[in-house]
Length: 346
Image 1: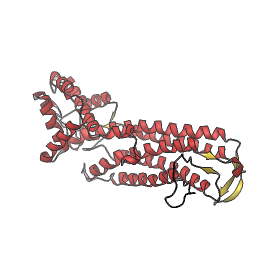
Image 2 (image 1 turned 180 degrees about the horizontal axis):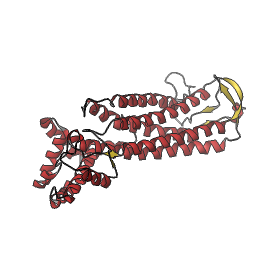
Image 3 (image 1 turned 60 degrees about the horizontal axis):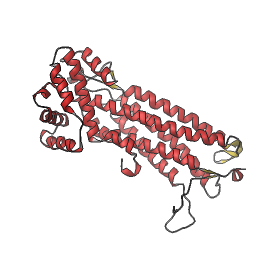
Image 4 (image 1 turned 135 degrees about the vertical axis):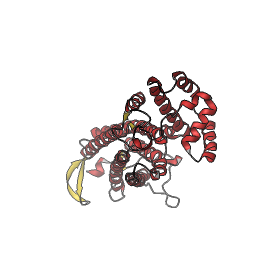
């Protein structure tokens, strides 16, 4: 996602350096489980853990340079690790296939992203709760079909949003559990080289669950559920934003987004105060829905795997989580600064 719609806290989760760090985490977790089973030397794996270190932007650039020759990202990574560590690195990746690393590390990143999103949902919900309590007796007209219906209160309108945000958080948390699954079942998922016990121990050390059954990959219905949960949260934010946009119309003007000193609404009409925060949220929700559709398209892969999902996930993993994170914090700020006109409502 472009910097305009990004917060550094979530962006930091998706840097190349962080990605390679999680790859090393998976390799070391697998290596230690294998060492315990007597398949690889424990001293060699611990040397890899010690010398593996922390990845810098320069390290990521070097791996990219190697990949220009190998045309394979995991092989480029392992080649770099051999450069950095030395002979002990040959014991990394024993009996594993690339997807063991890629899918398990992707689960780590999506799990951690879900934790940040849960924090954002809490912040958004708290902001709405505060305004709901403030306006629990602020009478306004209820509308159906866009037409005046019966009186309600602005606080009750917001209480409905509070409940919806609670459901959004519950969905994200369920999706977190669904996605926090990895694998070490090897090529086509048959455990031909590593036992399920090694997979179980390695995943436990990473805070993941082993996939109960896998092919060469973790099945992508899990990922589709995750990105759909994000899209649903975005749809709720858009619903709230559309309400604010309607209520800010000149003919209604029951609420208004905060308008800062020096802010301008139009390059040609000096009187304009436009609901730009809400409109921005409506637009980003459309993008999120597109990411959910892309995740659904990734479910039907060929046979035991293909890589048609790979390019999709390199985009939607960072972009969907960064986008919703930004939306939640923008919406929270919008609610905190929202101007309410009780007399206009009355």
